Length: 206
Image (cartoon, rainbow, N blue to C red):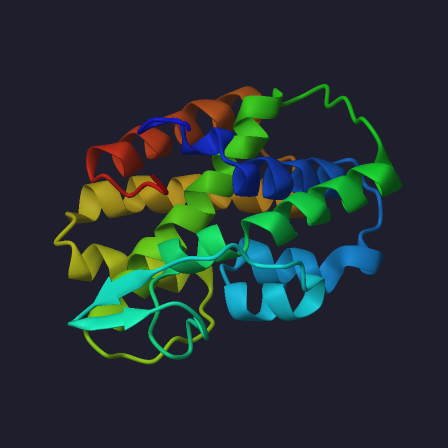
């Protein structure tokens, strides 16, 4: 099991990171677009509806209630529980995508950067969703820019660090949309700073 600061080595980070590399390569992902959007946005309910792999047996105790089934973000279950429930479907998704696109070599970015970008977005979304659930605020789909702004309010993260996290988001968007106004090496440097800030506030998947 990956330790703290190594959540980019989780299956979900491999799966989403691989698909980010597919996107950057210019290959079309229409065949898997819905599943990819669901998992990278942290919409585990929707992702499980798409993949439908058997879910592992789990027992959750929360607010004096023991639960073994019918887990759902919409019902207020935390994202970590949903991520664990989705792990068999995540593994199947990665295998299916790899069978479609095969091994891809990227000349600009090493594989760990793709996986860290995946963990970066998912961890920010997970933490924000978990805080919202603890406040009985219903789950809703949000753009990452708004997720970061909201999470920084909840966690009292200062403006300077919020801006660094937003720089990490902008780098991730470059991978998704491939603008080339600045060098990839400069982008990696800024993203690594954002990764460090994320870790400073323990905004991690494990």
